Image 1 (cartoon, rainbow, N blue to C red):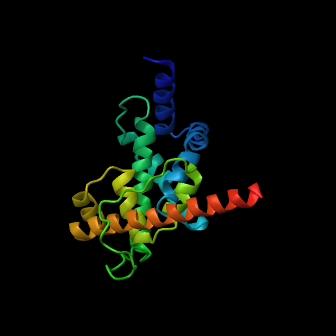
Image 2 (spheres, one colour):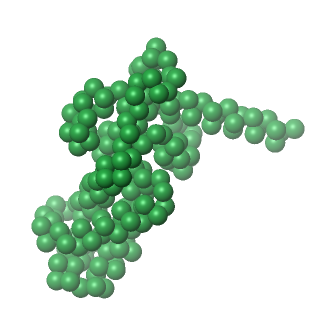
Length: 195
């Protein structure tokens, strides 16, 4: 057994036995990553704090049920809890307003277009995703980051499967527009600085 695997197993056992120092160590190790996961779904900082607090409580209460499957499995399991808590928050706070098909003026002729994120900083990409309407952003994140099918997403969000697919395609189209704006602004700034 590798040293870091042994350490992770030991940390889990300490948390199972209620060790507060181990809980703090877990929090310090994973809070940054789990905050980023939560921020993919929820944009308000106070809401993120609330969802994370609830997520950590749930993690610590349920860790005795966790089945260790090697390095990374604890992180992935914790992220799933954060995603589920984020979705629960969105549903409970009526923020899951999926856009109707006419809400955005986006032509349907480029249905297969894919956002080209090459040469765009990760922070800018995440800002673009977080600026999407809640429904679009939620479906996009579940499909891209959580690798869920539209059937699974529909079940999770209690929507029709074709609604999930249309939300995803519209999210992609909005991202393509945002990328175009970003690149145009970048070119204009570079031209201005070159003068």
